[in-house]
Length: 405
Image 1 (spheres, rainbow, N blue to C red):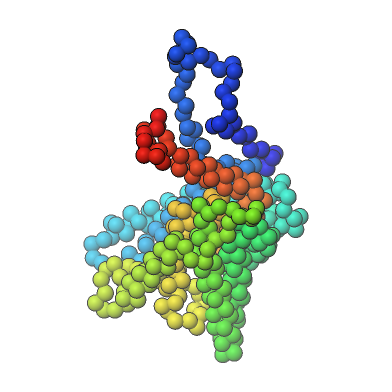
Image 2: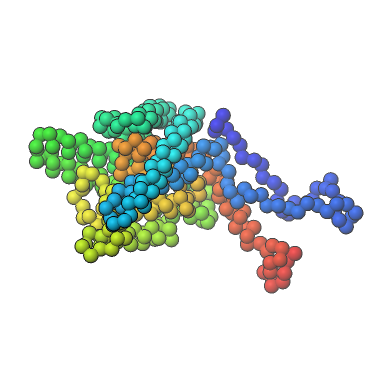
């Protein structure tokens, strides 16, 4: 079974007595013992029974590349300057290639995750939702490879992915080390449902010419943006899950509201927002205009009643958090990939690949919340690594100032 792999037993501590049957050393006339070699995987915690989660971060890297190259840079570079047509074409090809690779990998991993969820201990209702929503989204993604997805199908996959995200978030909120990512997932799911409701109201208002419905559309879109912004800030807080914090009183370490990574994310988002706002001026540089056009591609529709600077800041912060989540993920590496995928899908849950990203993030969070052994294996591995690095090694000065070894 996929979820029944036990952790390998730990070896004896360094202070254990040597084995009596050990081969003699060089001083006793025997062959010299082989040099001890540190295993290349010693510092990497195993995934306790969830091998499919090891592929989430590489998949999220493809999703980030597809979003930056295909969704942001390629459209933003069109008409930006004279003589860059070849560069635009190369970026478009790179974005299309990353999107195709992501689609293939996402379909395979989504099917594996659905199978893993069915065999796991998650509630039966969540298992049924994973089968129904996940299978429906996969079928629509396969359909989108040959022809355009109808509007009704696009809306349905967005609703299905959002409901699955809410269910997974509710199930994962009970686990402390998954709680920040689960909160971001739940907020993204709620924002998707509210925004799709706003899209439906906008269609009705346009068909009937109703000003009341148009006003309601703006209010709903603003509420969706508020949930979306909270999701991005929750994801930034999730970056503060320190990999070096020690557990206290048997409780997993909790993320800090302010951490170096979250400060880096906020500072980078402020810089990108300033450049994007300057990109609307007539004397803007090409880089500033590129920032403005690229971030405009991430703004949600219908437009909320919110200052443009705040919309651009949230869009920029989401991209920075996705990149940082992949570079410095939480203790369980799969959570970094899930955090990146749910932020990639946050503004486009009705797009087939966006809905599939949200489904994978939801299934990944549900499974990771059951992988408590893998989490504690990561904690203990960090503790052992820190202890071994603090001890003096061969050729290093010890605490008394002499040379050891």
